[in-house]
Length: 165
Image (cartoon, rainbow, N blue to C red):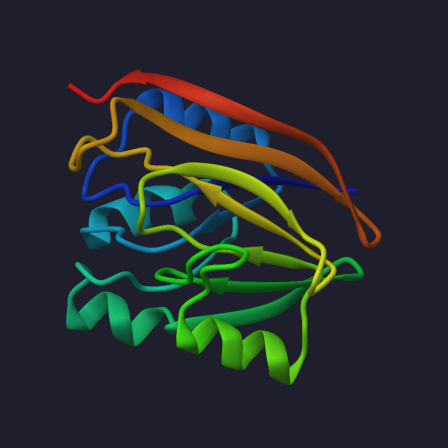
């Protein structure tokens, strides 16, 4: 079993609550818009970090993280894209990636809208953890955590970090 902390859209902001949850995870997954290398460095000090770059991320971050990250966690195939859309409204890049090889879990960020939806057409779970940072129009900062057990996702939990301002 692997405990995952899933976050996105930190926009250069990180606080003790995020770091506390990160310390309880086995891996941290970030769906882009880190905003600064400082966020990456703080998270990497705590646990292994996987992620993708977002539209606000600079060249240094883009050199460290890919636009599309496809990986295996235990026996679960994961696809992560910052601007990916959601079931029924995928971006062209997401449609292409899913058509090539459909994952069991598709993760995106960017919208600052927390979502957990099952895509019956592609037999995958879509997650968007919302935004854990303070930039944007969202009212509540959010992230998610869950457990990967073999090829199953268990104990999915939404974490509310408080108001954006």
